[in-house]
Image 1 (cartoon, rainbow, N blue to C red):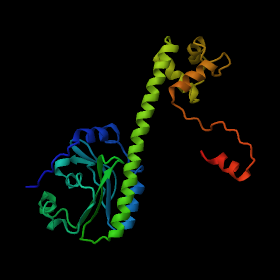
Image 2 (image 1 turned 60 degrees about the vertical axis):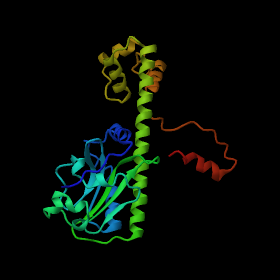
Image 3 (image 1 turned 180 degrees about the horizontal axis):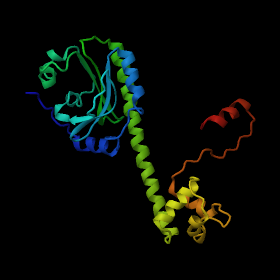
Image 4 (image 1 turned 45 degrees about the horizontal axis):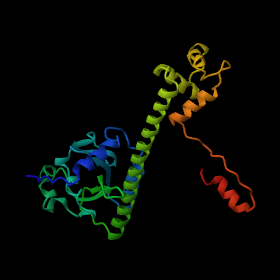
Length: 266
């Protein structure tokens, strides 16, 4: 019988963080492909995989293997990776058939899975486990401590990247919420359809005069088809668009430093 790993003490917090990332069930192959490719090149292993683990399933975000898996998720109780979530250090297994736990997995017993496995927990900076980065090879293959250390450092960067994505999502959500409250307070008469039209107008996907008339009545668009100050301010409060450049005063007393300052935000 293949053993099931104990849940972590902070399982509820951990799983909630993963689910809030809203990456599970989405196509992230290109987004995380570079991490997979680097691990493959460093180790010489034939398979690599980035996966998240929520409260019930392990879900592949991106992976490289000779035969890409059709099923991108499976119950966590059936996975190898459930057994490495509690470990700080990577789990390195030369021959999974001889491992006291992995050797009992049904796919290993049947001979469908063979060779070596390396599992690296993906953690945030405050040690919240999000999932795993895995290396696999169909034949037993050794891996040096230097390569393990290099991959582990890369996986730490991956965890920090996911944590930053979570922070950005939370901040953007808060900004949008504040923006919608501003709209409700300062332009309560605007409808959702009119707000969508204003955003489409800002994006340049709508300019028909008949569609702009409601916005002109609200004084958000001028009779000449231009954004008014009120319209521009409302869009700014929604925080949907990043400002490309911030105004800076540079006196060029130190030409080298001034030149660097011009490009520091690019």
